[in-house]
Image 1 (cartoon, one colour):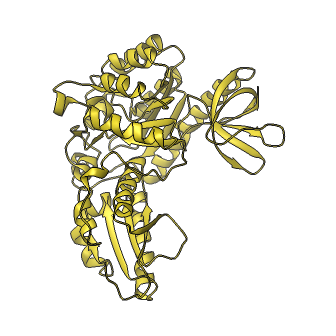
Image 2 (cartoon, rainbow, N blue to C red; image 1 turned 90 degrees about the vertical axis):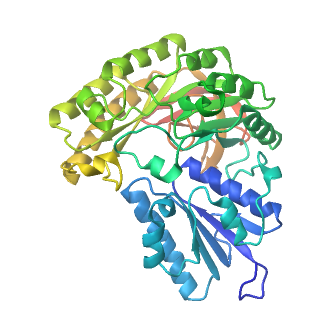
Image 3 (cartoon, rainbow, N blue to C red; image 1 turned 30 degrees about the vertical axis):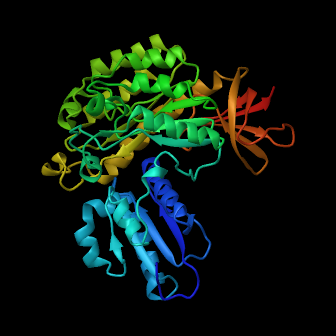
Length: 435
């Protein structure tokens, strides 16, 4: 690619948003490196070409994406970079508006336009690099995106507008990628998708996540397989069997539930009731004793009354989830919910989110304190200050608990497993010593 600079081009890919966006950036970087283009990720190094991979999920994410683009647009105006490209979810939804408002961006690309983006670098998409993705995560773990898009019709969600309909990848392709990751030293793979349980319906005409789990568990070198983003409606019970049968599949399930009041669930078009959800959680704990269950809830949905919110609080106290996150409702254009009035004030949304997290904080503290004296297998991610920091089988990267051991008293190798006895606990952290 030719630009005004006399120096060789250097590309910096900036990733915003979720792990799915990170995988997209990794695929872009792999393609560029495959054509001998100098490329870095989220780097402070000088680069004359910037690619911003945007997020358009909720208002705060959209604001961060726009501000990041504007920051680099200023650098381009100042002559400090030569080219600026934007891709990802935000550009998929708002490309026409953004082109008019930020003319400094040289080109805008949607979520499925990687070949067109590569053409700006005068390179072709290399099909032989499929499955050869270079992770930007630490060497010992990586995300594995098993499908793209979503066929669900949740009234509040804009993901189908940004990612399109559900498209599964084949088991053969996913196993090939997992084997490549294992050869690179990856020990933990986290399966991600907009909707895990839908996997296989489009290409195999049946839900095939259990078969995929068995195939991935057979890959030598992969010791932990973690499940993120499973939908509760029509949940395939065979998934629990695969978790229980294969030691490589973590006793862990991330299943966003969003709410527990039946009227709110119906308005959200979640296609599931509180009673069905309760039965599913109980079945999970029965089939997989000790399973760690993570969920997320959405507060402040249009029309949510204090009584409906209290139903949610009661449900959280009853179910005692191991991990729980809370989102405040964001009024998204072109979603079904956008046709109704966003009538829950922002301060009420924030107050409800805080109340729900206060409940979960107590649950988390009790569950963590119950771990004192127990020994867990811990995978160590990094060293920070005076501590080595790792995770148990029940903890995913960035969103869950961490295990801290004092570096001066314990020796561990980053990226390795160690047996750790828990000696103290806080709401979201465990402290231990290597056995």
